[in-house]
Length: 168
Image (cartoon, rainbow, N blue to C red; front, top):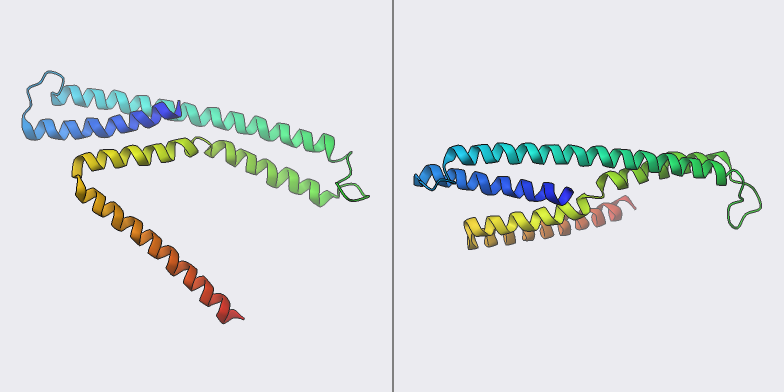
């Protein structure tokens, strides 16, 4: 479903592009009339919102179930089993750490799992759309942006290095 939502958001961009083109070109193609494109855009946008909200709800349900199961597992096992390499049972601090920190990390991982697929997919598809619109001007702009990000990384590392030297 998340990939469908991604393609619907890409479709929205293409519809807006065709809508602008239809106003500027006075196209008389039956499908490319502004009224038809506006209705298609509204339908596509509503469907994209519905799918996105459904995905969010399903992710929250899955992450909360997993968190509850992990907390239950910790209560069942950690209180009985000795930590590896020690002769004593787990103390209260370790148990609280497992419950409060690790369970929350699992919730966060489940909430952001679709972004591992959708993020790069959207970036690639939007780059293709921008290249088809602007051609080599987009390539030059994108290359300049990448150079600035790399330069920013070097400047940040240099500043961290010099702040560590000055703090000694």
